[in-house]
Length: 455
Image (cartoon, rainbow, N blue to C red; front, top):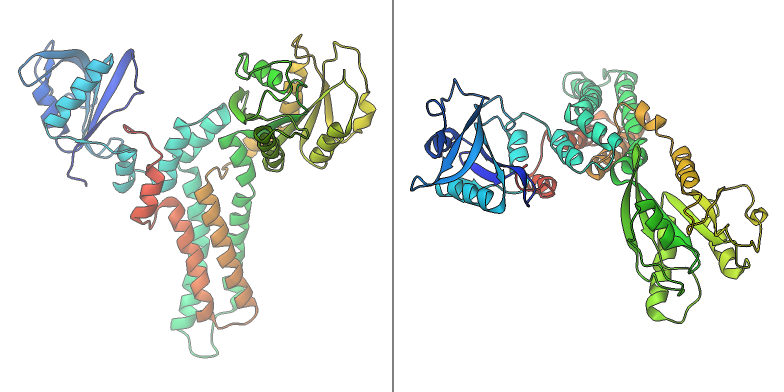
């Protein structure tokens, strides 16, 4: 175990009812015993007060009271980090938490790095790497489903799936190595027995990979782009969905020139909404860049909301927008239905769902929300036992699948078994990297640098 005792503020910065300052390491008990003065009773006892909340004051080196607190000491190894941990619950002010943290540092603690508490949990064997990443997913969850999937993976659901696949590969590897090392020439095991375990593993990998698109939507939100000509109501739609004036709305065409992105909680999932510059031919260089960005976003979006102004004639720019959404996941909004219509919806065919709205009167927003909910039915997401929500996991699964394919192809072609072992073992090792079975410092640094200090 790590010899350093670390300390950090584990709650968000700012004023509040309570803030928590946390320690982890073998000096935790010694330090808290020295600086904590109980209001009633004796000093903290390592065994009797294990996992109990004690009420008292934190005092500085001169015996001056810093704050009135509740302290919980937790004896390792049955803790988050498997080390001694102490959490000091103080009043949520900048002054209190800063003074307490500085006191802990003066008493011999080191300031924790981002994610170092969770990193210690991983290094000390309490969780695997996929579970450590699930902690971050829970912290960053923006909807109920992403939070539940994070908890699911924190409880080891992904680890179990990966271990099942690796066990199949291990069976194949053991038979392959037996055939290479312990049989005479011409007496190799039948390749069919090895292939069976490899096929089972390949099937499980492919099933996991098939959930990655759903997992991406769950974790990052539905990447939604609002497009349309200038002044058709794009920014008004964003403001209505947000229930606030986030985007500037004027009667001047071309007001929105840069991309505005907002996240909107939408029941079981989240919308990542991009309000874009109005699509039109323009000589304005800045506006043209904005229009080009809008067109680029269309191809990258999970959902496109195309808005048309029914009070204006249907023109070439509207035709261009229709061409952009052709064959894509899109909802058409016919806006300004409170005004006299200049064209009818028969121009749009039956390919896309059509919603009629008036942004001025806030009409039709509920119909749009219903259309989106219907389009992204979450029943499929809820049926999956595990979803691949992490890009690192997806990449490693693809690498393992590719190497397993190479090995399978070679075996079926009659290539000598010892030549097939390299890719098979490579697939096994790639899967091990997902759960941290073998992991470099570089990978650990990359995983834990996204964590906040104090977790």
